[in-house]
Length: 242
Ligand SMILES: Nc1ccn([C@@H]2O[C@H](COP(=O)(O)OP(=O)(O)OP(=O)(O)O)[C@@H](O)[C@H]2O)c(=O)n1
Ligand SMILES: C[C@](O)(CO)[C@H](O)COP(=O)(O)O
Image 1 (cartoon, rainbow, N blue to C red):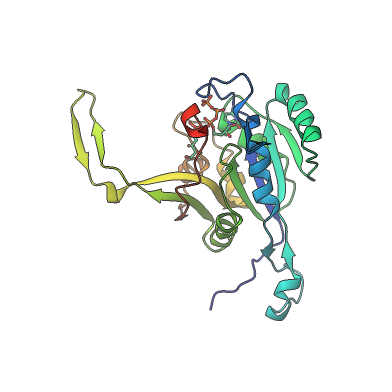
Image 2 (cartoon, rainbow, N blue to C red):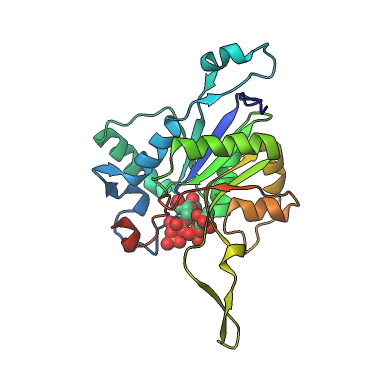
């Protein structure tokens, strides 16, 4: 039987919101746009605040009988561009949202923003989930599943099967059908053991690092896929917002 307790109480989430949202073309950075009256980033953070993980402190004698008494929360690090921090602080005031989270300045790319977030974690070990600030429809269940799988295998990358037909377009412009069953659409959260994640982020940035899984894989670690959700969309263009 799988141990219901996770082998650490060090759970971290790096929520990246350091981008400029160029494809959204909105005046306000997209992570701050209101959805049901609340900033998108607030919705996202609230999903992580709702997570309670069954955890076993490494040094304790916890038994299964005490699972319910051993719920751990996730320490949240939000990554924002320096220029956006005053806007975020003002929004938090307006929405009476004062979570106990750390704020870190972003970098010029998603890779650099994640790396900055990672540098703010000083625990020697644990598990870290990285999530896009603009994926507000993530659920606590998906987040928990990521921590559980990463505790067992080292990594947990959420994804969904492809529903449409897929064609690959060659350099000559000619397309051909491919077997969609072989493909997955990758989402966040992407959760990892802290040790391997730190090692992976020592690599020099590569142009194909579009997510953390590609960084971890480049460093030679295997990637475990877990189920995401079709609702867990990334708000990228005005269509997504609608
Ligand atoms: N330098 C960057 C670039 C992106 N991100 C974050 O990575 C996530 C996914 O990126 P994307 O949707 O591409 O956001 P933007 O980079 O803001 O959008 P665009 O590419 O349209 O400019 C977002 O939460 C974004 O804020 C980040 O933290 N730092
Ligand atoms: C991390 C990600 O959301 C997984 O699908 C995606 O790769 C981000 O890509 P973007 O180019 O930063 O939008």
